[in-house]
Image 1 (cartoon, helix red, strand yellow):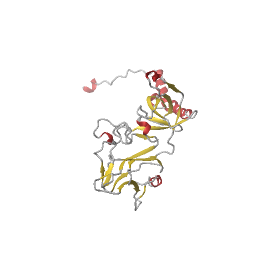
Image 2: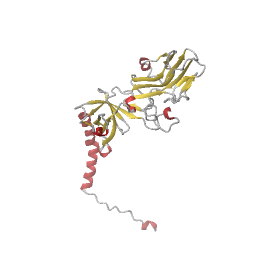
Image 3: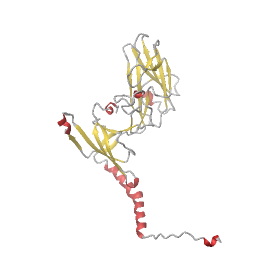
Image 4: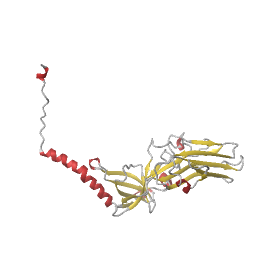
Length: 313
């Protein structure tokens, strides 16, 4: 009886030519037109090229909390470890990977060395324990995919007269510690791990201890680290001069293709030729149908007192 009462659901939709044409237009746009626009943008950016380096702020959850605010409620704007971001390293340079060895590093072995929690200096630094004239701290890094070249190495140390801070490297293929150098690091970047050993030495226990704060190792993951941008205009103004501020404030617009997949107002760029630095304060993406094709960025010149001005290019 129930089978006699069953009636299939009626489909009263009526397809018209406009529906088919509309869907066809979207398909053509997504699969042909927009990808072609992206290709044309790659070509267009070559017309008047301004080579730049791009620095992406390391987001929360991607890195370690900096020791510059282990007690304070906010990071130190002059910190040379996080550069005011609160995350160790501060920024990732496009095409590279950054390894930072400091007191927050998880895989550390130490002998006669400990973090100094007495002084208010930030970031925290390693010092020799009382009664020790020598000591060391060892950290292990695991190189990621790379091309075997180092982009930049720098360290933060404090070495009073009569003391020294020395660094060494060792990989699974080494039987002894090797002198820390760019060449020795590059020769070991394809190993599964590299140990970094920092030794602190002083003449006597009465001498002040040398201090080791941070060691940055930035190696290349791409052959070309530069991005190509068009700079359509530059404007300068002294609008604040009436308030007694005489410094020149300069803004710059950058147009990029879709090589970079994400840009925020926390990031910044630098001209490779002039080495001027620009903080991004406005971001506009052109992404029809959700497909990214280009970026329009407005940036302001970074002043010498701002944290990004301390960051090694």
